Amino acid sequence: MTEVFDWERSLREAVAEAAKDLSLGLASGTGASTAGLDQVSITVNSEPSGADIIVDGDFMGNTPAEIKIDKGRHTLEIDRQGHQKWSRQINATDGLKISPVLEKHPQAPTLAPKE
Image (cartoon, rainbow, N blue to C red):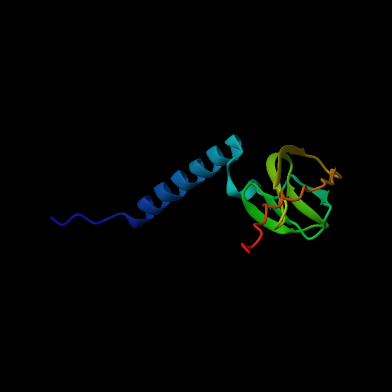
């Protein structure tokens, strides 16, 4: 006798398993559907302006800027060519303002031509 595959039962089991995985992700805070729900606006300036804004390794724009990121702890980097990179751990809350002064890289000594 030929066994008939029960597609309806298989589909119900797959949907139930996916729902369980989704609920576990939501409970742990790692579910994709929670992204963006707790975003805050922060203002990032720098002296000099025009520096790259990098949050957790992702480029977010150039200073000055108001950016939206998830609330909580992040690594914020501000980087401009010819200057030392500024990097800090921040706790992002709505209205946070950050305005670092970037230090210039020390000038390498120049060699005088031989006479």
